[in-house]
Length: 229
Image 1 (tube, one colour):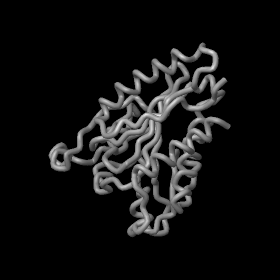
Image 2 (tube, one colour):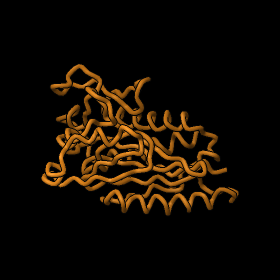
Image 3 (spheres, helix red, strand yellow):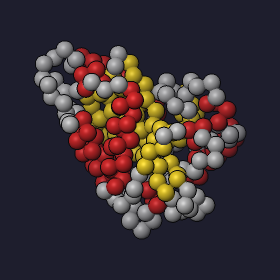
Image 4 (cartoon, one colour):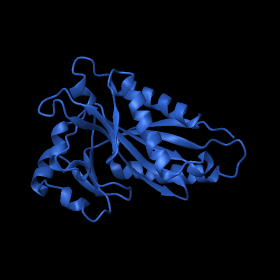
C-alpha cells in the first residue's frame, strides 16, 4: 500500500464556504480509492481564508463570539457555522490552514493518534524556523513560550486544530498563525479558552519570520514524512 499523500494542493485564498466545497469533493475522491490496490491514502489541501470566524456545534461555542455585528462588519469579518470539532476560531490572510483529507482507516489511526500526528507536524514545522512548540495536555493544539508582550513568558497558542471524521476519512484540520491580523482574535474567546493568549510566528520571530510559502512547503514535507512512517 502506498502510504504517501498523493499530492499537496494549494488552493490559494478562498472563502470558508468555497474551501468546504473542495473538501467535500476531495473526501469523495479519497473514499473512492479505499478499495483500489496501490492507491494513495489522501490529499493535503493548503489554503488561506478570507477573514472569517467559524463556530462549531458545541453548545457553548456561540457564546465565545464577543464582537457585535457592527464591529464584525467594521473589520470585514464574516461568521460561519462549521461541522468540525472544537469551539470557535478565526481564520484570515497570513494564517496557514491545512486540511488533510486522509483515510484514517487505511492508515490505522484512531482519532487521538491522528490529533497527535497533526500536533507533531506543526511542532516539527515551526522548529525548522527556530520556534520550540509544545503540547498542552489540557488543550489540543500547539503552544510556544511567548516573547511578545503582554503574553511574554506565558504559553501562547500558535496553532489551533479541529477535525471531523466521516467514513473514517478526515476533514478540516489545523490553522497555523504565520502572520495574520492578530487584532481579529480579540473578536472572540479563541477556542473557548478564557485567559489563554494566542500568538503568531511573526510575533515570536519579528526579524526572522518566514514567508507563508516557506511554511507551506515545510508543513507539506513534515506531513508527508509523518504519514509515510
